[in-house]
Amino acid sequence: MPEPAVAPRTVPLAAYTTLKVGGPAELWEVEDLAGLREATSAPFRVIGGGSNLLVADAGVPERVVRLGRSFNDVRAWDGSPDVWLGAATPLPGLVRRAQRAGLSGLEGLLGVPAVLGGAVAMNAGTRFGEMSDTLREVELFVDGALERVPASALDLAYRRAELPPGAIVTRARLRLTPSTPEAVQRYMDRVDAAREGQPKVKSAGCAFKNPPGESAGRLIDLAGLKGRRVGDAMVALEHGNFVLNLGAATAADVLALVEEVRAELAARGTTLELEWRLWGF
Ligand code: FAD
Ligand code: EPU
Image (cartoon, rainbow, N blue to C red; front, side, top):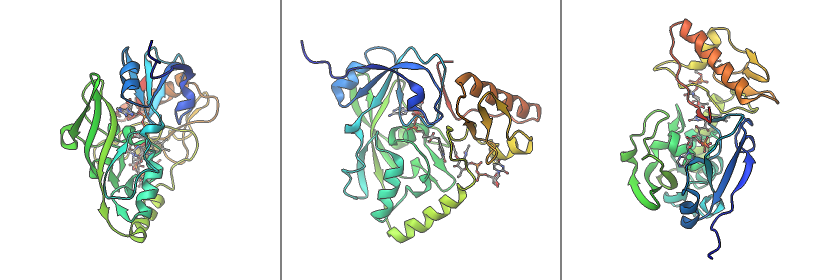
C-alpha cells in the first residue's frame, strides 16, 4: 500500500479565519500534486488566509483543502520582476519583499491579510491597486491536473475572478515594474495612511462590496449603524463596512448583523452585495 499523500484532521475553522468564527471541518493540508489529487477526490472547498470568509457554526461537510508550506515562496523569491510564486505565499510578506527589492506593483495591496491564491481568487485590491495589475498567468489544479491559464482568461474585475468550477490556484505569475525601494515605500505610506481608519481587531475586512461610485462603509455610517450589535458581533465604530468579533461572536450573530445592516440599507434604497464568502449556511 502506498503511503497516503496527505493526512486529514478535523479542526475548528474559526482557527483558520481572521474573523475567528466557524465550526469544524476536515482539513486537508496538501504539499504536492499527489496530495491535491487525494484531497479533491471527494467534495471540497479551498481555503487561503481565511480573511474573507464567514463559516457557519456547524462548520462545513466538505473537505477543506489548504495549500501547505511547499506553496509558500516568500523566502525563495530572488527578487526578479517576472516570477512564479506559490499560492500559499502570504501577501503581507510579498508586499514587503517587493518593496525591499525596489519592485512596484504590489504596494496597493499593503494591509490585505491574504495569501496569494485567495488574493487572486478575489482579485483583492484597494483604490491604490489590485491583484490584476501584476497578475499575468495562473497555474490551476483542475480535474486532477495542473494547467496554465493567462490572467486575461479570468475576467478579473472589482473583487472578482472567474475561475473554472472546482479550480484551485496553485501558483501565480506576477510581473512587477522595476522602481526603487524609496519610491515604493513612499507609495506604501499613502496606502497605509488611507487604511488608518480601519479597525485592527478580528474581522474579515469589508463585509459588502461598494456600490458603484460609493463606499458601503460611508452609507452604513450615514444610516447610523456603527456600533450596532448582535451578541458579540458589532459594526465597527471606525468603519461602517467592517463587522468585528468582539470575542465570543458566533457565525449566527455575525450573519444576523449583516442581514440587519443589509435590510436597513435596502429600506433606504441601497442594495448591498456581500463581499464575504459564506460557507455552510
Ligand atoms: P480566503 O478568505 O481563504 O478565501 C476567499 C475565497 O477565495 C474563497 O471563496 C476561497 O475558496 C477562495 N480561494 C482561496 N484560496 C484559493 C485558491 N488557492 N484557489 C482557488 N480559490 C481560492 N480585501 C481587499 O480586496 N482589499 C482590502 O483592502 C482588504 N482589506 C482587508 C483587511 C482586513 C483586516 C481583512 C481581515 C480582510 C481584508 N480584505 C481585503 C479581504 C480579504 O483579505 C481578501 O478578500 C482576500 O483576497 C482573501 O484572501 P484569502 O487568502 O484570505 O482567501
Ligand atoms: N467613510 C465614512 N464612514 C465610514 C467609512 C468610510 O464616512 O464608516 C468615508 C471615508 O471617510 C472616505 C470614504 O467613505 O471618505 C471611503 O472610505 P475608505 O477610504 O475607507 O474606502 P472604502 O470604499 O470604504 C475600500 C475597500 C477596502 C479598502 C479601502 C482602501 C471595498 C468594499 N472596500 O473601502 O477594502 O481597503 O477602500 O482602498 O471595496 C475589503 O475589501 O475588505 C476592504 C477592506
